[in-house]
Image (tube, rainbow, N blue to C red; front, side):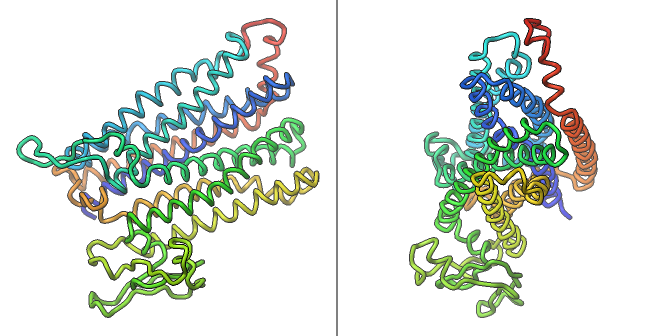
Length: 462
């Protein structure tokens, strides 16, 4: 493999690992706000203990997320220097805004959230929780702005740079922020984060119920998490539809790859299948989806509101400007399938809760324990389909990936650093799982014991 592909693999590894944690912290921040507001409103000690336990889990997730995310920014200089030189003014402004308006807010109040239980008043602690949750969502806003600009660039012009090399320069920061895909992708990402954290809380709480431990704590946690999971799943369906319509308008090659759609014509939607590319470059030789189940006209109807309206096909693009279709097709459809499954599980949980039979459905609780992996898988697959579906462009229609790699990037050096990152991230993941398992096995009782002295006026509590 050449330096370009190796650099892509290295960046994919770092992003994929890092992206395990931000959705958890974003969604768990919202859940903490709900839990602590319930404590303030009712004064029940159960909600206090519940919030303190999940704050400890949040702190672990946040710390690993920060550690795993730092190396990504260095790769813009080591592996993607030409990209940084070309669009650094635009891309860097969004990253700078993330640091100034989001990370400082989130990390600045994190100490109060974790250590301030017995050092500040209830209302001040709730404000800290609210600001940490807000900061985590602001962080998502600016990262999505930066990535969405790469998908649908706007608000820039090209000017001569040092040595006459052209570069992109911001002319309208509002257009950069509100480019054609930002809002749709932001909503889709946040709904995914809500579900990711909600299903983690559901998984741990269902485990406690099955083991008949911390029963009241588990039931209260499930009520909050299931509400968030259900809202996130249903809103995700709407945001996904809006996002797909935007892709059809702004990145038609990607939409064609999502459905393996070859010729511009009214298009159906596949539930599954296997895309086979054309056997030759001849224009009359078509790619096709084999072994699939297609609903005729559904893609046209969902995009245009009319089953007879044509959808742009892959054949309208030069072969060099088509994404690798089958990987995009498969990851996109698996992501959609997981999303629909999460809707079914959330609705089923809500129905059992309404019927007051949820705690007796041990088979459903067992599903909840293992369903924690589903939102994580959907997040990773959605990211993969979005980013690979943009290829061969690193900035859609403006700069190709091959032209973005650092001129001095050496394949042997990238191999070595890739192996080092893989080992490091494996060790970091093992550490995360060990620490998370330790906290879960300790359970909320650990939080109760730690809080015990503070309940009697001793400020030495956690």
